Amino acid sequence: MNTKEIENLKVQIKQLQEENQALKEQNAIYKEQLEQKKQEQNKTDKFRAAKITR
Image (cartoon, rainbow, N blue to C red; front, side, top):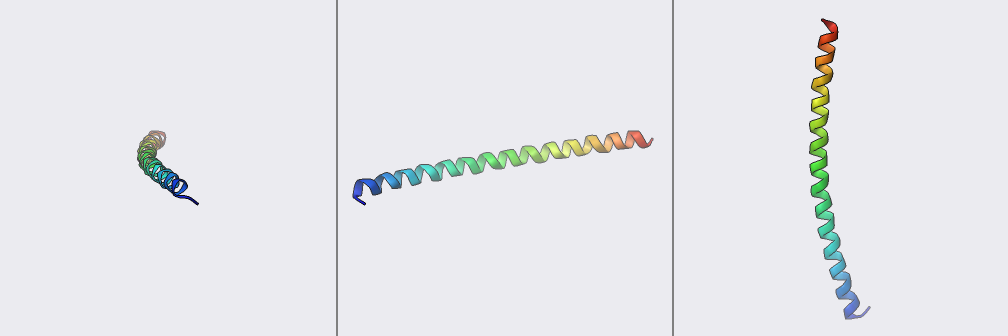
């Protein structure tokens, strides 16, 4: 492998690391949104269950 190929690979690695970090951050946001939706659904389900049992 020559120097140019090595430099190109270093650039590709850096780009992939940046992309990976961005995906991790996006994943964290999605997980948070999903958790919020679950909690909201839970509240709705509990409210409906309380209405039914009355």
